[in-house]
Amino acid sequence: MAVNEKVETQPVGEKPELPDTKEGRLVKLILEKAPYVEGSVRRERRVEFKVPAERIHEFLELASEKFEMLMQISVVDWLKEGEFELVYQLWSVSESVHAFVRTRVPRDNAEVPTVMDIWPVAETYEREAHEFFGIVFKGNPRLGPFILEPREYEKHPLRKDFNTIGYVKMIYGEDFDRYDESKTNYVI
Image 1 (spheres, rainbow, N blue to C red):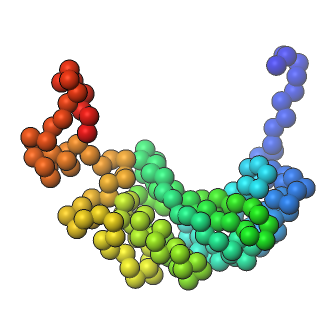
Image 2: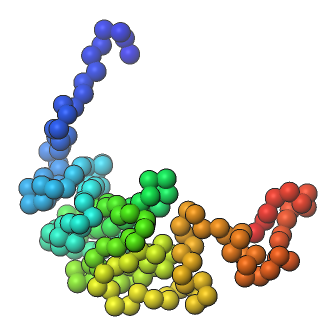
Image 3: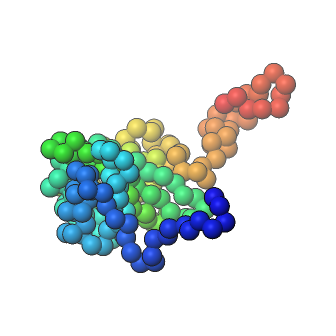
């Protein structure tokens, strides 16, 4: 970039302008009903919303008017920030648009309301996130052992601070150590 070229910046406090596309109009429509949310168009057929955790159920109920399907609930462990990010992936059958709805909750005592009342399929995703990360979905009556064995249930093995090698040694004993041929690297 030349020294004299001006860099255009977004004024502080203003939201980016949405494109005049199917996706842009959809995001704009939802943001008019939910001004507490940040929304953007990622690319064609992909939109994204960032929602405060205390309003996630309210927003997802609103979004379900246009996004009929819950495709997945995934979790990102932001260990250094002390937060979990829940990503609800939604699909609009009528608009053929995929939405990512993101919210963050503290790692300690992570709780969010269930969305089983909106999409019954959420039960499976919530049970998985509960078992592997320890997130409590208030209102889901089936949180409990699901995939892991009972002795592993309270361990939450997908958290970034989970000590896999320590856990393996605890369960299988010190004899379970497996090294590569040089005896320098674990191959577990």
